[in-house]
Image (tube, rainbow, N blue to C red; front, side, top):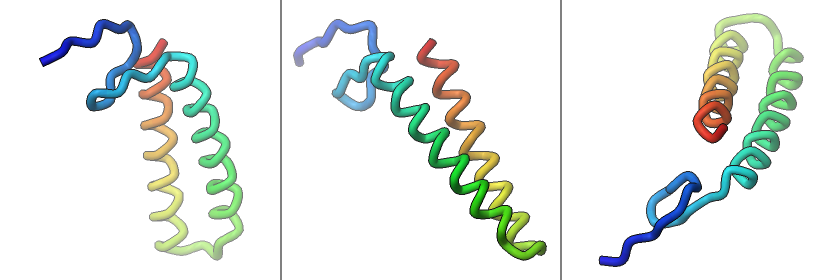
Length: 70
């Protein structure tokens, strides 16, 4: 078995650079902002509340990813 030496984040057998990961995290943040903007236009109710919770969880995972990479 071959060993890959790298300081990047390992995803499976693929090494991802920190710069690339941060760029992708920023793109995900932009998507989350658009989702939030759209969700706020929904009528109030349990469905809207659930969607907003999921978007919040998504944003928390993005923040955790950025913290891990730095």
